[in-house]
Image (cartoon, rainbow, N blue to C red; front, side, top):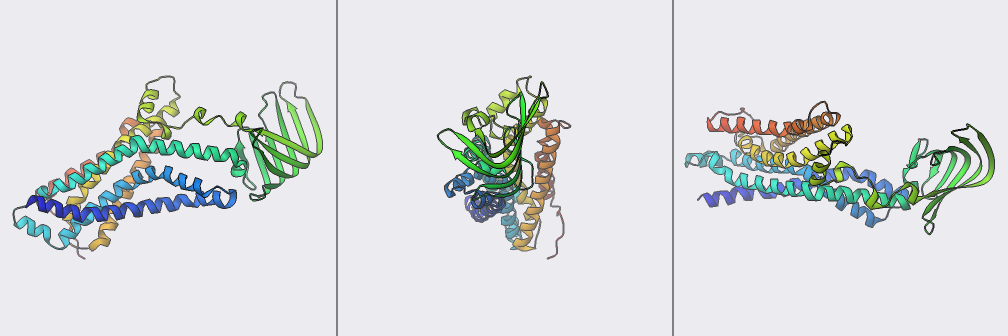
Length: 375
C-alpha cells in the first residue's frame, strides 16, 4: 500500500518538476540571449560559438532553477491532492502526512545530489569555459569592446572614444585614442577616421588611422612632441595585452571548491578577494542544501491549502523563491564587503528555510491549519 502511495506521489511530482525546470531555464536563457544576440548581429560571432556559450552557461542556469522547480513541483502536487480531498481520504485511512514524506524526501535528496554535483563540478567548468571562449573571441574580434560615444578599453591600457562606429565595416569616425602601454610615455591620438585590421600571422590588431595628430608625452622629462599624419598604424600585439588561456587570471566563479579552500588558507590573499572567494565557496555548498529544504517545505505548505488550483501553487512558489533569492543576493553582496562573515551570511537563507520547515511540520503534526484560504 505504502509503496503504491509513494509511486503515486512521485508520479504527481516529476512531470511538474521537469516542466518547471525547463520554463525557468528558458526564462534565464532568454535574458542572456539579449546580450549574446548582439555579438552575432554586430560582431559576427559564429553560431557555433553561440551554441558553446549556451552550453557553458547551462550548469549555472540549472543550479539557479533547481530550488524553484523542486519547490513548485512538490507544492503543486500536494496542493492538487489537498484540493481533491485525497489527503483527507488518506488521513481517514490512518496515513498521516509524515508517512507521505518519504517520496518527497527521495525527490529532495535527488535534487540535493544533482545540485551539489552541478555546483562542485559543472558550474566552475562552465564559467571557466565561457570566459575562455569569450577571451578567444575577443582576440579575433577586436571591435567587441568599442562602443559609440563611450570611453571604452577593449585592450589593456588602450582607451578608445569614437563618435560613430560601424561594426560590420569596422570603420570608426572622429577617434580619440590614449595608448598607455609604454611605461615611459603616453601617446594620445586624434584622428578623423580609423579602420580595424587583423594580422593573424603577426598575431596583432592594426588600427589604421587617417588624418590626425599624435601627441606623445614622456613621463620622466615631461617632454612632448606632436606629429601630424595623413596615415598612421597603431599596432596592438595580442600576446602583449592578452596572455595565453592557461595564464589568464581566473575569477572565484571559475575555481573549484578545492582551489577556493586552498587559496583561503593562504594569508597573503587580498582582503576583498578573500571575501569574494569565501562567499563563492559557501554559496556552492549552501545552495544544494536549499534545494533539499525547498523540496521538503512544499509538502506541508501544499497540504494545508484546500483550494486555489495550480495558479495559486505557481504564485505562492514564485513568491517563496523570490524572497529566498533576494535574501541570498542580499547576504552575498554584504558578505563580499566583509561587513558580514561569508561563512555565516551565506547560510542564513538555508537557515530561514530550515526554520520554516520546522514551523510548518509542527503545525501539521498538531493539526493546526496555516491559513484558511477561500477560493
